[in-house]
Length: 232
Ligand SMILES: [Zn+2]
Image (tube, rainbow, N blue to C red; front, side):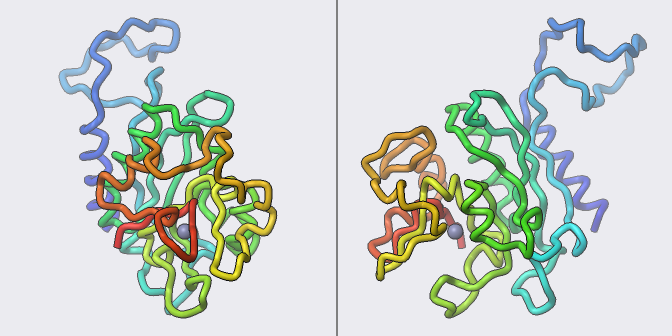
């Protein structure tokens, strides 16, 4: 399993364009010998391509427990680049189902190119009890979390690693009764706001997902889930 996962990561690395002109000398590796095979190094001054890792039960922490609909063997931890609210490139990670790894990699490469800002991107395992409310209040973009639908009827697609919540504090969930998640998102119920990172129908950032067949919760009549994208 580990070998297969490593191979898939290599394939993804090979998809990234190589910087053909080594113009930088200050950060180059000091190794002076030329090798017959071009091995990617981890010291490249250009943003590293997406990398795919297997995940263990330990890494999933409180986001997973026995009885969840998918196990760690079907999940992957994908490292991607994103542009933060500081305008700089950061490295984040999303745990997703293996079936959507290629989509997720392409989507976040495109969001990075268009400079769509993302506040932060940790796995929900980094929050006490993998509590989604804490992740949302922290405006943390995340994917896998073995949890039920807000209605309590059935698993959320997050429990399959097939849904991603983007900038959830400023793109809240609003149910038919007007309850909001996270509960601190009141200022962002006004969807005429145009703060960076707020998602509106037809936005390039939204289309980055929907053009690939992902559904956006902002298109739903009720509940409205502006942070949520899914691919079942
Ligand atoms: Zn969601």
